[in-house]
Length: 184
Image (cartoon, rainbow, N blue to C red; front, side):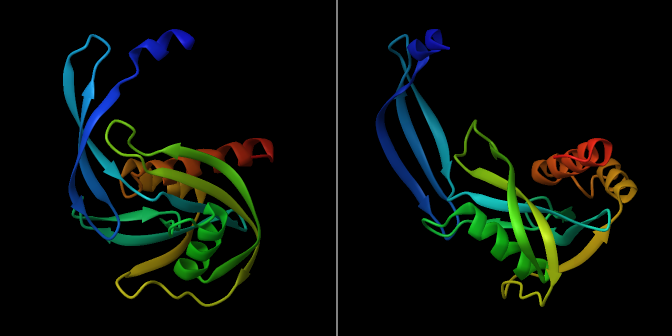
């Protein structure tokens, strides 16, 4: 991929637009490889962690209202990273806060950029093992229902678009591989 280095964009100017609790927005002016300039709208996000948690061949999910889409979503437990926080620590925290379960062990599954065309959010997904039931304690502005769903339910929810976010779809496919091979 050395040949692509010639296509790197050089930042000329960054203009901060918005600074929020979770994200910030900036507009960068960049110099293109041909010498022309262009603008790039960039969302900065601290990153997030999510957990694929299986109990007796069921996946723990939460259902909550997602305002940007104006609909309820079924998702694996997840949340944003605090400044400087280890993603595995965040994954453990979010699993317990949202579902009440603690993981005896967490293993990395994958990490990916959610929308690299305009955002720098990196999401880390872990597999929870040796689960122990405890008490959930969602954030004060977080209203969610916890459920353990079967693989068939997960597939049906995807068809119905009740599951339609990348992290949960990736988790369902990882679960499918696990069911076929015994390994993730």
